[in-house]
Image 1 (cartoon, rainbow, N blue to C red):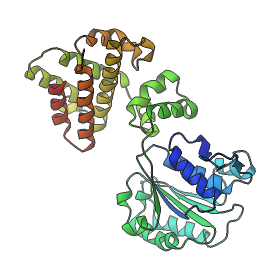
Image 2: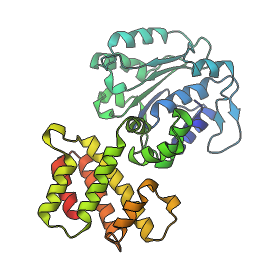
Image 3: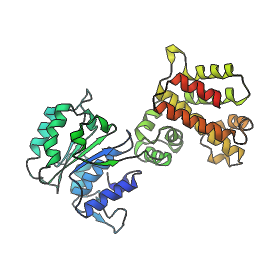
Image 4: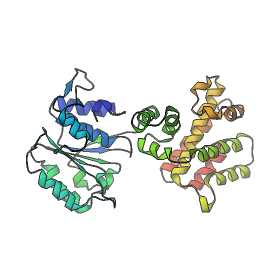
Length: 338
């Protein structure tokens, strides 16, 4: 993976590229941000840019140096067999033990064999057992000559303060829906139509979008549509609360927080489409073209500022879910607000 091939994170890849070009890249880095947004890919791209035998210098201010992607070193890194790029990942039990860390550290006592710098990449560093984190401390504080460490994590707070303090942290944000869709098509073989459905629901995470591609989105889309239909009229409060109950599901088949969030993102997508229909937009710009008939039928009920107001309510409901509010409470509040 080259830095130029990373989706999104242009500010961070530019920062890394400039540091490599000026030979000022810190030897210990912590990539922190949501799961599935590309932290691990950037870690691999950084190691590749550092060790490429024929780096590309194109004079661009935003990306002054990058790996060529074709030399022997790039080929070996792409296949995961470069002797100086060491990846540490959680085992089948979801943890990284001290024995693994000690084995890797024993190899950093020697200068790089074929690369310019040995790169130790730790995936999901929050799974490092406390003893393993402590074993890393001395190397993070005083990295062996020619060695760099890149730790990636979605929950940096789990790491020991002594580990965090020894690393320069780069904060990764969520990808846009367009960036997620592009990666799904380019790297994972989804069609444009499939990517357009999954990307807006993935909350900026390619990993989450891939998980959604294995989910029954049809049932969730039906639930989102039913919610809008049941709240579109001037129903009484009791009817709206019943709609909320149906949205969450019965106890035996109750939706979890993640599933409810997907339904609400689908509802938000439909509300955007309804506003577009009311504005006279071309049907080709709709995110849910297969629902054009149902959405057009709802457009009159959500005319004026109502669609925008409803979209804001859904957005606040998603924020509440993200802050661990109860699913039933969120669903009932939203049903009343729509």
